[in-house]
Image 1 (cartoon, rainbow, N blue to C red):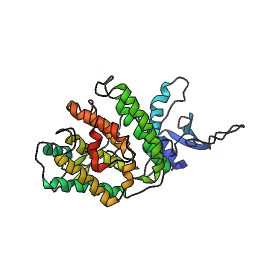
Image 2 (image 1 turned 180 degrees about the vertical axis):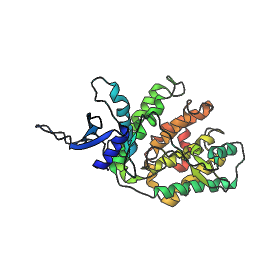
Image 3 (image 1 turned 90 degrees about the vertical axis):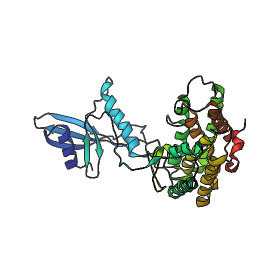
Image 4 (image 1 turned 135 degrees about the vertical axis):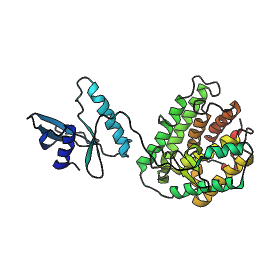
Amino acid sequence: MFSSDNLFNFFNQIFKGQIAAIDLGEFGKQDGEVVKDFGYGRPITVSVELKSGEVKDVVVSFMRGDEYGHQYYWDRARILMFQYETGGRLKKHVRPVALGYVSDTGIEPINGPKEFFIVNERVKGEDYYLSLDRIKKGDFKTQDLEFVKKLAAYLAEIHSQKAQDRDLYIRRIRNLIGDCECIFGIIDGYPYPYDLFSEDKFIQLEKELISWRWKLKKYDHRLCVVHGDFHPWNVLVTKDNDFWVLDRSRGEFGDGADDVATMACNYILYGLYDKPMITGPFNDMYMTFFEEYLSRTNDTEMLEVIAPFFVFRALVIASPIWYPNHPIEVRQGLFRFMVNILKDHRFDYKNVNKYMQG
């Protein structure tokens, strides 16, 4: 992609059609006794001659994928966008000239980026959480259990697509514990101090999660295709009782336990609105979801790793920032669940109410 012709066309757009010629060089050769063995990419130099006779020497840099949080092109784009936006504002920093991307047809410049957006197709359907609201009010239908089975079958299908990448799996577990959008970030978003869950309890929770992080490092063989944010607000139910999914998050691969915990935690949430344990239709939905998934995947190993994924989702739905209208009893039930589940080396899904004790 970085041929002379492609670079000429690229810089001709940057310099408004005023390019006379370009000359490519090499960059990055290291001398000396201590040579850096690892880098994020090898840049090339380009001398750009304008029609006015002025020559501008620039360096074209790109990043390669690696296990340090740069596996995806959008990881690398995030860093390069930051450098483009801020490099010129720092004293003695080289000035950025352009930001570009590689397309299917060549290399293209991005001029003055300030914000990005995405456009998706629009599909017809009703948010799944509205079905859960209906059931909470007493309107439970046979088709609700059939729909639960469809959700479990869908996850079983996408999770069957496995991948081998130890570094990526470890990254996903690291992000689960420490990322701004995940456990530590959600905890930091709670009010401080928070009467329903003290600082000491948060500290103990975090300590136990560190131990779980090291436990899960041994499960990198579980890496598979995931949705990454599979909850009722990201599922649209169609009139024929089928569905669409929205807002895939946090990468293409992960542990299937993430998606399972994300949806199951909401059946627990809605169940807690009736009493401090899961009974009635939401218990039926929770059990149907688990048993359908396990019958299709035979992934009982998931029960050994699912606890911290449940903690993440419980923290989200217990948060007074994200969900401000829960009764205190519901939040307390979610806190008991997340504390107790970490104490068990294997999740006992058939006896979920034992985790509500305390």
